[in-house]
Image (cartoon, rainbow, N blue to C red; front, side):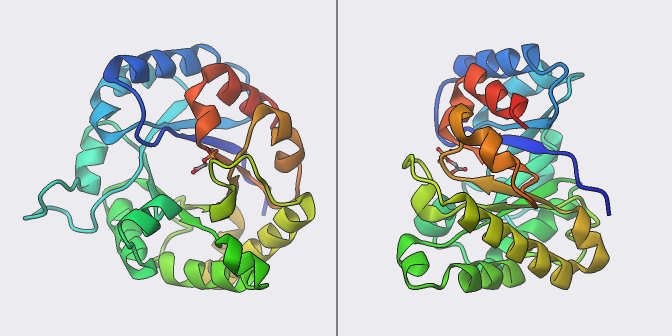
Length: 248
Ligand code: PGA
């Protein structure tokens, strides 16, 4: 199975205005030509409709940060995968640790959301990652393997699903695991994904996320079985996001 093309995904979280989002999207599109990676931006859901025309016709993909598991219904404040597709998104981040923490999302809910995303024609990006206490207890790989087993629905690989490994303690902190730790975890991720998805799991892109910056991107992206990055803070500055992609 050939190594999948690198994906650099920006998770804009809950930042900015509509005007900020459109300007950032335009800046990313303007600098996107000739980069050795696929680019994806994931603005706040309320900004999708405004950002969609800015990326339309470009090589920059558009994604959301969550969806509901149901196609429609009485779910006040929630947004379905079909609505995201209708608004111009082709991807959706699911099970980010901030959602697992803030909204008590379980692996089963993440799997249901991923299935709903796939049914609506979206590519799911399923996030997994251990806490610092779990890493210090030597449980990181087992925790992540368990999250994967619970969070990937059938057909995930065939639908173009992506896995993002994001150690909770590395998100927004400036801390990153050692290269050896990332290498070991990604080797385990690949083995688990192959076990869960069969041979098609070889094509599932495995992203690293957690304090990826222009200064550390080249070293992280060069590691075996690291097929890209999920970028938070540095994705809010177009030059930094593009520099990370250029380092791929
Ligand atoms: P960070 O966030 O790059 O700011 O650490 C990554 C993420 O939460 O996806």
